[in-house]
Length: 312
Image (cartoon, rainbow, N blue to C red; front, side, top):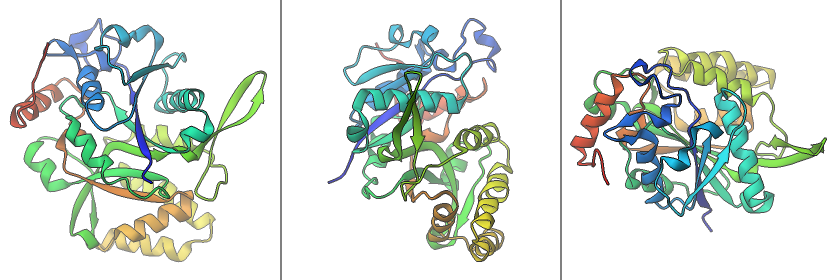
């Protein structure tokens, strides 16, 4: 039986790059045609096949006052000041474990969604959900053909990987889906339960906070994916005795002969995680808002795809 999918909407990012909105502290609340950008994403999620939407927010953001009252939404607070992405994810997992309990959460997939992609629509999310069919996969990530991004977002630069077996350059998008069975409570210290993350063989994983934050901080640099593969993935492969696999991965990357199975094998060997790739056709997932000029891209996409720029 296919697992149900719940979503985590991440909203703790700051708006310091947007001087025109000096009174707005959080990116989620940046205005777009009379609505905060997060409201478009929340609406699309609530109208999709997602079972439930968990909004992760800093308490002072008070998003419940800015989003429409929808039955699918539950709010989880992250009380740490200026939380990093890893902090937000930790708050999210703790909130989900508290809400569902371990056994129930283990029967679900969790889709992590950024708050700054307001051009999305419900069918975009439904198309991804339809591809989440293997309950044994630990982690799904969305990829889109680079040629689609060049057509609809020609002024943006996206890192990409060439996969020989599917014949094209593909760019990763910001939508990731994680099997709920990877998360559990781990002991109790001073009345506070710790959280543990487990790999495919049910052994604990460590160092994830550093990986998440480092990759997040370099996500817009042209060499970030190369840095991740060479600086982290390959090092872990070598430490685990996978020298032959390391050479195959490096040669495949440099010669244009990389394949999905080879990348999945390397990720499994190095991280102990079974990874699945979701082929996306939604340009909107790549149209995140990181600088003021990005609003123009979003509004053009809304017009091209006949999406309402505002609604009552």
